[in-house]
Image (cartoon, rainbow over all chains, first blue to last red; front, side, top):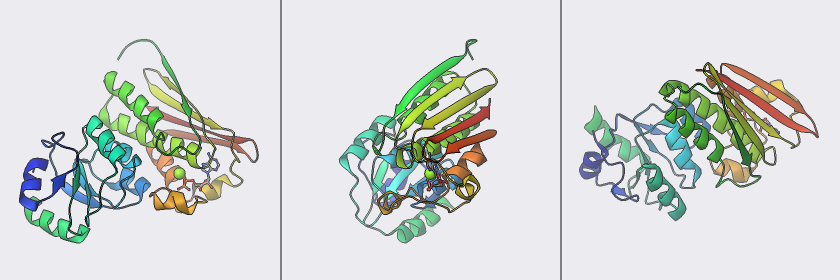
Length: 110
Length: 141
Ligand SMILES: Nc1ncnc2c1ncn2[C@@H]1O[C@H](COP(=O)(O)OP(=O)(O)O)[C@@H](O)[C@H]1O
Ligand SMILES: [Mg+2]
């Protein structure tokens, strides 16, 4: 499912504007240990993390995830949003917990 | 791929997490432009990123020197930091001396060296306590 449709169906909002919305989400990966994400996330996963510092952009690129999702109303840092937009990485935000995002994604992606 | 050998050099700044990853991103872009197989780019970029992060958080910054030849890419990351007393111990998954501040950022899980091993075709770690560390990563292209 494309990021744009996923946003529409889940109510997630993009911090990064219109870039990268045509990317295909093929799964979800939830983890806050960056080395772990790089070696275990699958290409195309939407990556749920509470981190919003600059380095998540590099990790997202290396892990080839389809987008980053920050849960629980966390705001993405401005510098991170700028860098992500430059690199074509979408950062989505939600008031939902990681668990609730996963539940919704399960219904949509299975 | 072009014929000549490509040599690249990057400075890795100490304690600057916001710039950490610039060198590996740069190399990744070059490999992309050269039309290297995506799977191999991923291997080289992840291994190099881990080494670069280590140079920033443990090594007090350093230098990355990269050689891209037809058959391989070699990444050498050198620092003049405290060195590693027990390399075998440092290689163990989960072993880390990273600060709380670094851990709060999601680094310092003790998986950097294991990831370098996993994603490289050859990994050489040379280190002397008080002198510094040189990590050499080779990925066959
Ligand atoms: N360049 C380096 N200089 C000094 N010590 C290092 C260096 N690289 C790794 N180490 C040591 O090896 C440990 C394990 O490294 P690594 O597997 O990358 O885990 P992490 O970086 O998460 O601590 C580090 O915590 C540190 O003690
Ligand atoms: Mg490390």
